Length: 97
Image (cartoon, rainbow, N blue to C red):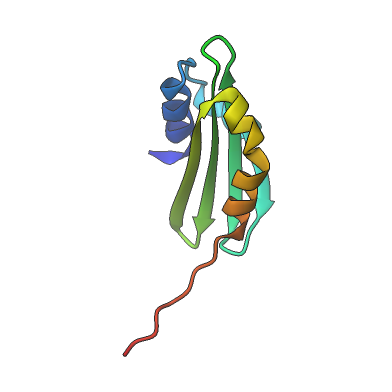
């Protein structure tokens, strides 16, 4: 579905209206990880007191999604750990036996 489709799906899960596809890139935070380029998104519905943190990592054409959804206060309390987890992922090729 692409980045915009996923971001808008996550927004809908917490009761937020979708963004125009062209506005989604401005919402992204970017960083490099061992797996590849990561975009992460933070969204909150203050009325419903729900939030989402989501990371999208492009790993040489494969895409990895990591998402945390829940009450805003709990999501915020765990933001640093979520981002550390997202950035710490590694890929290992299993030994052939």
